[in-house]
Length: 217
Image 1 (spheres, rainbow, N blue to C red):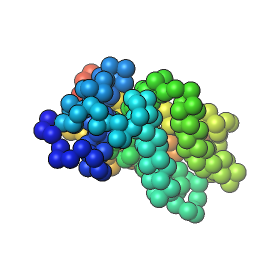
Image 2 (image 1 turned 30 degrees about the horizontal axis):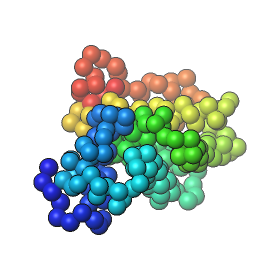
Image 3 (image 1 turned 90 degrees about the vertical axis):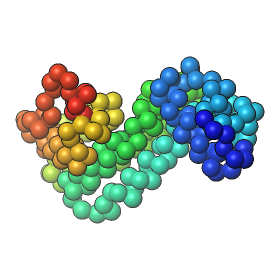
């Protein structure tokens, strides 16, 4: 990779983050070396320390930055008022679109939690729980108003997030389903689950041979 003009500043920092995301998503955190990262960006290895103290801090910064962006984007997308069903629809549409648009960040945020040191892990887990709480509050409100029928909103929260977040592991942008189509399908499933309907999985895209390559799961 050609050397970036200058070894400091926002442009280089962003290049380091992009390269780090790609390398970790491809090879894993443990296999990525700082020498490899510096070579990918086109700077001396020592220049990396202008931006972070060590490899662990770099990983934590990537994951923490992703979580901060996720929270800010969700807060901007959610309706400040409205029915629980409307807010759950907006949440689902946002979560699907965000995970389709930023698959590397999402993948690393889940797969590399094991690589975080205890204090860093605790900070990220707290941010994840805050995100879960925002969905849980919507479900609790829907149960209180009678819009939803859930025996355990905590379990429903985890089930919904697991279903929606899994998109980044199989979705292919060049497949037969657009982001809009995904949003419609998953919104139908999430609302059916929240309402306690027996056909909660009726709208799920069919699993078939070659589905991963086709962009559907």
